[in-house]
Image (tube, rainbow, N blue to C red; front, side, top):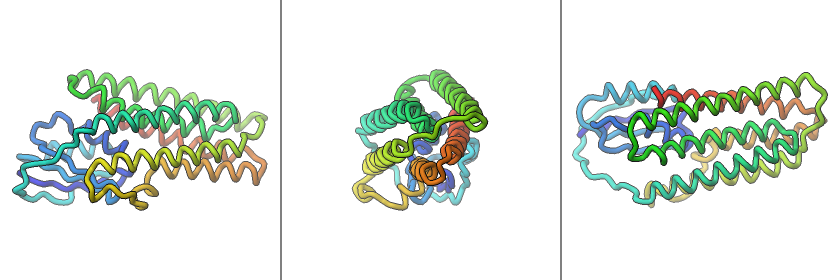
Length: 264
């Protein structure tokens, strides 16, 4: 048995972990995957060479780089029987906040909230693909990934068009208090998801690690929308909301392309 360690610089939340799991699923030489999200490390226990594994990791464009490969005597691994239940839980939380942020974003005229709702939807897609493709064929998994990726890109493009319309039009100011309040709840929801998934790893990792939470893209986006809400109120301008919305739409499209890579 060999143990290969990868550094994955853009792996900052469980959504990226699931992308990697799906990408490496089907490589028969892999015995176990051990993720260290706070330190952005992936340890792969496998037999044979690392070429196919390394190629698959690099193809996701998450900043993957092989650090080392050594032999190991470890052949038994603890699998978490509750993994599917946990995935359903975080899928439910993410999809619920997609609906909440989309609804409140439209009502409050905040593109920041609308964009963040699509980011929540993107995470839901990743967890959903992980669940629905379990036990399914590779072709089934690729079809689901392709549909999810293109749907996500379509929604993001519609969002970009709306941002442009509002930027050059004469729109009312978004409701800054709704932006801030909803984003604070979304921030809490993301923290809960991270905690639930990290708690499932082992007793040693059950506690909340600040380094893990505050390096997460999802949390940074939430903080960005909160900041935009404060600036909307302070400057009496909708521009901060449109700027954060544009940034998040770009991140959503990047995530969509990562999902599409799973369909190849």
